Amino acid sequence: MHAVESTIVSYAPTDALARTAAQSGDRIVWVKLSLTYLPLAQPVSDAKVLTGRQKPLTEIAFIFAEIATRDGHSGIGFGYSKRAGGPGMYAHAKELAPNLLGEDPNDIARLFTQLTWAGASMGRAGLTTQAIAPFDIALWDLKAKRAGLPLAKLLGAQRDSVQCYNTSGGYLHTPLDQVLKNVEISRESGIGGIKLKVGQPDLKIDIERVAAVRKLLGDDFPLMVDANQQWDRQKATRACRAFEEMNLTWIEEPLDAHDFEGHGLLADRFDTAIATGEMLTCFDEHAQLIMAGTDFIQPDAPRVGGITPFLRIMALGEFKQRKLAPHFAMEIHLHLAAAYGIEPWLEHFEWLGPMFNEPMQLKDGRMHVSDRPGLGFSLSEQALRWTTETQEFGTRP
Image 1 (spheres, rainbow, N blue to C red):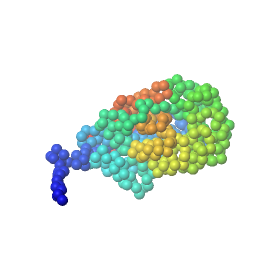
Image 2: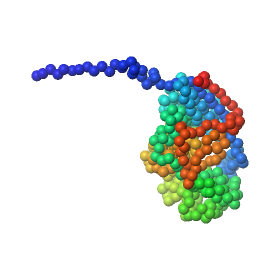
Image 3: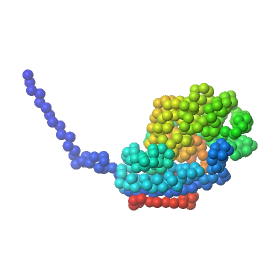
Image 4: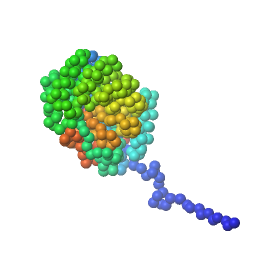
């Protein structure tokens, strides 16, 4: 029997490979936070205002995070709050920001977890996760800029444009004749779909308004309605039945946002798709919604904590064959929707336009991803004038 010779191979690193990834990574050296208030041209009312649950929306609070690294890379992200919560989000973001200094900006998942635990005693949803979002989004913007790619391309884009619908012309405070004018303007501008607010105390008024817009648009132009959580299960069933013949793309938030089971039951019962999810503020809530069976999921990256949890929602949604229509913040959601495996919709809001230097490209019913690296936007001089507070951490390189 012959002895088998063994050879010991040394894996000792050479000088060129002596450092580990942890030793060689870039480092965050500066973070800036800003609290900015975007004023709306006129107060906005939906069904929550009509029923006395909320006051008309007059401004939106934005929390911007700017991050810079030792090696000269930078990124920007934002979160937002409507009506209330902006100062609270800003205060918690200031508590979190020092945790980023000295960290490797490549480790986005680890940093999301770290920031989550930094505020864990306040919970893992709501304000605490929303305060993380500006940092997480800024880190993804930085990563894509460093790669020289639009974020959609970095994520592995499925498409270079996303079908786009408009919401802002169909609020309940807008008279029907003006709604019809707004619909015409939107269609002529190249929008791909129209969404109307519903949820009047008298369902007949909703039906009249939606029927008038359907007649104007024709039978096949994409039309959606949004009840903003104003119906119980019985009223929602009646409304869905009444709208069934209008060939709607979806009926949005017919029930309370956390009635996951109820939305799933409506989705099973009616041919018209059911959409919801914009009010949810973490992955776990969206997971419950997805498993309950709604047709369209509508996550909002700033509300769920940023792009990192949004990608988890996308993965589960695609696995369960849910359609995607992210809420608000089209400057961020264009890139995420472009990477979704099932043809999605993007919500168009022109409100944020004055805050950024770069226009978005709407053509033939679709919003097109630009070739600018990262998210592709920078703050305008107007946004700086609307800023009420700032705070910096670390030293700007």
